[in-house]
Image 1 (cartoon, rainbow, N blue to C red):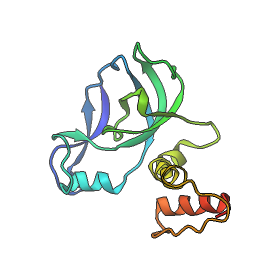
Image 2 (tube, rainbow, N blue to C red; image 1 turned 45 degrees about the vertical axis):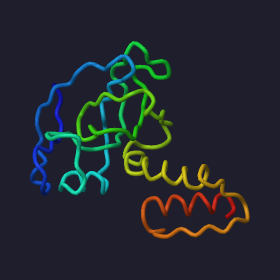
Image 3 (tube, rainbow, N blue to C red; image 1 turned 90 degrees about the vertical axis):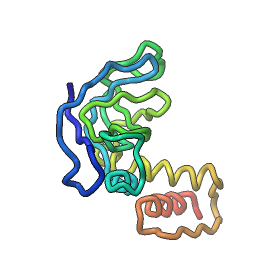
Length: 165
């Protein structure tokens, strides 16, 4: 058993309940993560209040988290017990432990604290997608970022400036 914040019915934050939930061993292509930090983003709020429909209730919200690999499935190739990882995936971030497919894991350097990674992982990945994959920003480019005060905008502005845009 492990503890999690469980949403049993849509509504306000009072519907998020701290309770014991089962903790299955990882499937062959999964790892179990002992989570240290997660984030709350607008998608979580929209799932909680019913604007977005989760697959089914009850559910453990939280689509991103950071932690230590505690157990690995038999097909895991790139991670081992004790590795520090982050992920953006399905639900389960609001729990002490979560099983995640290897393909969603990101190894984390020791130089970035868990709290910082949890607060910026999805935002950083979105900024990376926009300025390195959608269009490869380079020196001399002009970049217009609407909502530069938001999480993605702050990271994208700093990154674009670093690239010389």
